[in-house]
Image (tube, rainbow, N blue to C red; front, side, top):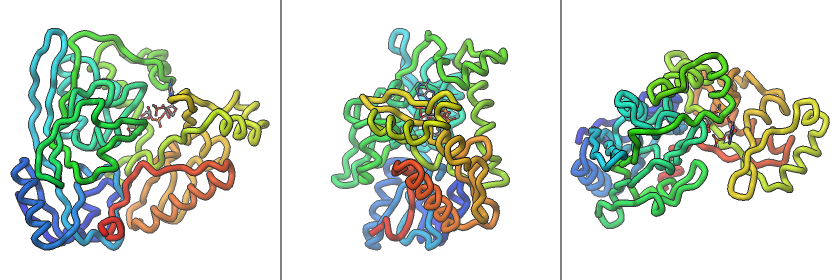
Length: 348
Ligand code: NAP
């Protein structure tokens, strides 16, 4: 384990904002995690776990405890007939794992290409894209339980998965150390999402895991600002899930716009409907590219909040709050954040 003191959180997060972390403890093994926890407890400090920091907004006041930086590496596989059980350390990059699978033309994670973040972060919010989510191809997760110091295994049913949700999001005492996926040697492309159908219509190759990965990366890159210039954590909010009654009310409220636009898009989800928030922000509220001081909504995907150089976490917070209020005032919907706030307040 390596120890660093007073590290700017802007260097550990893709938003590139935030104050200093008191300590950053880099963990390359389970033993390192144990050492880091002992270090944290000896000083009576709180801790948070970070991977690539691609889904967090750190406070300008910094973090008064320890950041456990997950850097456990390694990818290995075991064949089971036509399946492959592929295990990756929590500190591997998710994208590297997807590329590894694509290099062997194994099926299962190709639609999840280009998602930033570590392997260990993937189960926390049950990452998903283009009709696939982690829960579909997960075999099990190993996590270190900081309450009793025991390494535990959770199969898919034990992970409490929901839409961009899992038990790990609500139980910070569980530190994910590795993830095992069940991939396949044979498979068929899943390209029923409009973006992928459009890519197929343009003649893009979607016939193999590697080709799908390449196309998905191309599509996604258009919707993501250049991280060399800006800070962002990608989609800042979750797509709202409404009851059928709430959806009808929304459609009535925006009857003229809905008729002109061919209806408000909706997708069934567990007896409710999922609404693309980008549609609400763009088509109903006219907020595509909306600027708010040093921050803005990305022109090609308004769900993506962007920080210009020099922006602070408070600036991002102000934009997020502004959007939450506007959506609520206009539609009655309370939107939820996907991005996690890391602050002294959270540490208490
Ligand atoms: P998009 O493809 O424009 O879709 C917007 C919304 O409509 C999403 O809620 C999506 O559901 C839903 N949707 C679209 N076509 C659908 C279909 N055929 N069946 C069911 N639902 C459908 O979204 P985007 O913002 O450009 O993002 C592209 C993909 O990356 C999406 O799948 C999105 O969820 C995913 N993404 C995931 C994360 C994450 O895991 N944290 C972050 C950013 C984007 P789904 O959300 O269920 O796909």
